[in-house]
Amino acid sequence: MVTLALTLTMLGCACLYLASPNQKWLSLVPPRRPLLAVGSLLLIAGLASWIAALHPLAGVFVTLHVAMVCLSAFPYSAALRGVWRRN
Amino acid sequence: MIRADIVKLYKAIHHWIGISCGFALFIAFYAGALTMFQEPIARWASPPAVGVAAVPLDDAPRLLELVAAAHPEAREEGITLHLRGHENEPARVTWKEDVPHQAGQPHEHVHWWATLKPDGTLLAKQEEPSELAEFINRIHMRVGIPLPWGSYFMGVISLLYGVALIAGVIVLLPSLTKDFLALRVGHNLKRMWLDAHNVVGITALPFHLVIAVTATAWGFGGPLWSAQESVIFGGKQKIVMKRDFFEHYAAPRPTGEAGVMMPPAQLLLRLNDQVPDFEPKVMVFKNFGDKAAAVKFVGAERGYVGDTSFGGVILSAVTGKLIKDNIASRQDPDRRASTVFYALHTGEYGGITIRWAYFFLGFSGAWLFYSGNLLWIETRRKRARKGGEVEQSRSTRLLGSGTVGVCLGCVAGLSLTIVAAKWLHGRIADLNHWHEIIYYAVFFASIAWAFACGAARSAVHLLWLCTVATIAIPLTTLAALLFPALGMWAYGSAATIGVDVVAFIGALCFAWMAIATARRIKHGPADSIWSIRKAGPATPPHKPAAVPAE
Image 1 (cartoon, rainbow over the protein chains, first blue to last red):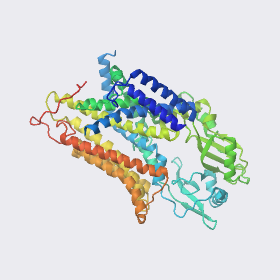
Image 2: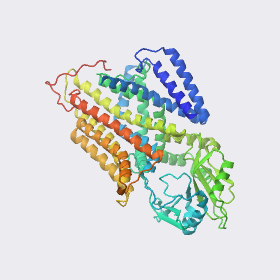
Image 3: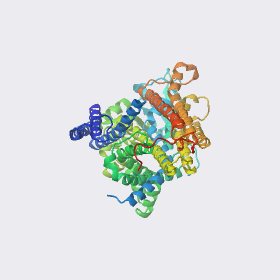
Image 4: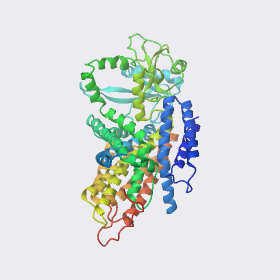
């Protein structure tokens, strides 16, 4: 259950990042609204899974913290990939 | 739309708080990230107890009886029976004894462990456990300043940090939507540092706000409690606390009559029957052998916020009947609220996922302050330049040296003091004291080096020092495996191997940063403090920025 919850939360954050106009993972601009919708659904599913795996309060906090890590790390991963490609 | 003068005011607040508190916050966050793995570090650093064979749980009753008979003073303090067999638990049974002390002075303890010899007799030894993990935690909580001033200092720093966070958000509000998740790497270094700073600051804002509030409360907890006691409660708070918390969760007083103790294996079954979701780590026997003897199970009730070090269940050690508990699911609302508040700072919930999340967020916090200082320096450079390259001001150079010395000195000092746990064990008398000496020696030497050589050169030197110090952690384990004559140890548990793997990855990151910094100091803009070239009229102008600065 924890693995499922973690995967859903990370995928949800990846979709939200791709929906951002500032995303640097793809050179083409992906459709924003569908990605936002899918990302939100995945995050809600992730939250539900965390709550099922833990307790409601812990589930909410774990989802929030995993999302914070992902949303901090994704722009850096894209920037580092760009730097390596240039080098 | 926020008025420009308001944004300017908050920008000044954000900058000056960041500059004045950044060093302490870097240390607190970097060491705090390491404390997320306090137990694996303690396990990595703890030497194996010589001649100690694992005592099966079925033989524990005899071991406990022998300890209680040979060391009666341990009965009152509590005899701990370890259930997990971790490397930092030297034997199945441990206890501590009070050291004679003057009235009014803090209690000090000596630690004992005990096991059974092959012939069934008692082997007990007084041995101080490694305090490396606690030392890292002290650096995290008080940046090395002794109590109580360290707590007050960090309370002030945390309060200002909260103000800086709010000021930073207000500064960013006008461009928040446009720049959210943007990290533009290009020729405009100020833009790059600003984006790198903002991405972490905004995406992890809830974490930082929680840490700021809880750390402030922690820092001022003592004085606030005393003020409440005298101003609001008129001396009654202590009585209520004693009744509702200390006595509520204290073991019963001994009767003086002998009682037959239930074996630990049966007590565990009784615990499982009465509190099924509770996962105990240790059993602490109070007043062993007395009719009113109790066993306190310390552990976690899985799934709750604050599930690790706050929970506990007390059973009668004679009948196995539940006497008291302090588990999350049965705490009263105000106690529950304070536990949640505390656990949100320490990350004690959600298992390994939240530990890794806090670990990365802790590092990102350290990065936030490091990048904040670099950003300020870069901004100064742009202001001073005004079209041509100039020598940087003294304040900029000093801040650059301070940033490099304090931040990298803390990193190298912590890595080297971790390494010393294995190399110095058995070679010096008081290793726990040496952990402090090594850390502070490296920390202050790094600062001195940074001011002596300047930010650019010393950044490369100190990043290589961080690389060497950090890679020495897994290399020490490797040396222990390859050369047993060195007298060091290498464990095979996932937790201790994890310490080596994470240190190896960390060392690679420092090496990469050292190479990148070395490239920059040679080829970067000459009017930067991050350059070893002299700025002047002969210096060719640096490539213009691709993106205009603010």
